[in-house]
Length: 319
Figure 1: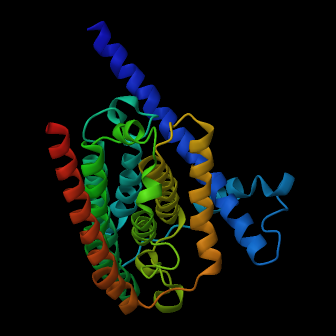
Figure 2 (figure 1 turned 180 degrees about the vertical axis):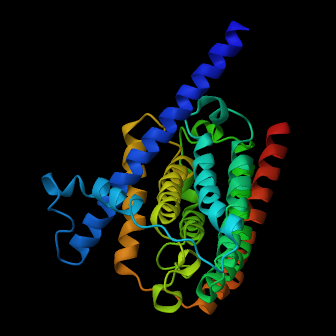
């Protein structure tokens, strides 16, 4: 009984630390992004609030949370209210496979857990666009469904290739199998496609068609404001941080407490932000054709190649 209570108490502490650290990371990731975009555009970015603008994220959060709140007359109220909460919860659930929550991180099915959560994340976006009762929001939610169906197929096939190589469903296997050679070296095309697929899943430039300002005002979140918009905003940056961590583990296999891992983690964060500053938005038809005509054939070729490689390698070992 004592060990069970101790186990539950430690789990609650780790969960609290997970939420606290992620909230701090979101705040300063937004400042980091605004600074980088500022220097790309030959300006300084936020620099008035405290030393070099360090208090700017806190000021922005307070401004958003205390904004006047309206109830939309024509919205489907309960669905409209609960969707931002679900989006934020699903983004936090992705982090349950991280080392902050050691029990889930060491389980044998952490990749499957991540895939399940990623598959569910499209449903709150779809329902939020429908429940807002706005044409722009509805168009944004329809795009989110089409993008997710298209790119999750190639993304899951890429993960299947990596799972065949590591012979398991756990992220811990990636660190064990990359002690001597990194997957990044002989799977560079797959690494490149994986980054692009992640950008589509994150709805980031140049694939931010769900929130295309020039076409849909703000996409599925057009009718959200105050605390609800804050939750959607937090969920987006939580997912960016998580995907940067996953890329560093899956293709480089660094220990999560090493300096090399931190370097690669910040490199992927920097890459996602830098792409926003330098690339234009793609057309929607180009995005769909890129998936079905480029991503899927290359991924299927790699899948067959890796399958044959593992088959003949195991056959050679058994002889």
